[in-house]
Length: 186
Image (cartoon, rainbow, N blue to C red; front, side, top):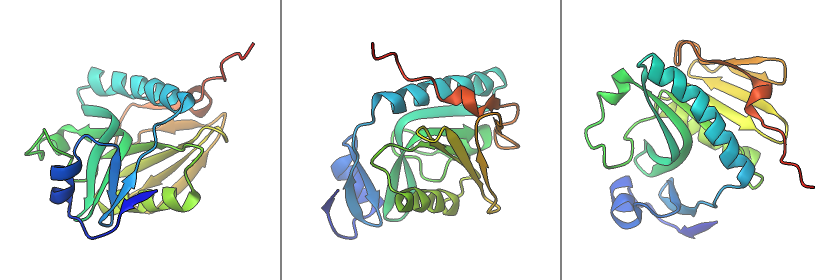
């Protein structure tokens, strides 16, 4: 749901809305809805798996929790999980603000309210901003769709392996392990 129309810049947005639950998309301020239990559980689990490789191999840093990423002069998005290589980390001049470029790898977990066009727009924005690899997790379908900077897309389901390639070397996990079983309702 949009709350304001206009052509607000990233800097104006940061001054007025830093720390508040909004994205800036093409100059328009957009509400961010809180995520659900399943989303949070998957985000924690995957970030834990990724973080172990990142930390053990000193590859860079992993960010979670809707970290603001500038994807254009009028666009800031909050990402679920972002990986920054050591090389990318060296480019950050203002660590107390949003990330001024696309992370090396972005993970988005699709929530029930997300539309296909919204997800496609986010993928395009990340790749245009320099992100090398985007993973879109679909909990209801128990699948992952990967998008890389060369335009390749892969759909992975149960029994297949998600890997970090040359963006997150050494990372591999079975897609079925990304989606924990639903909690027992009894």
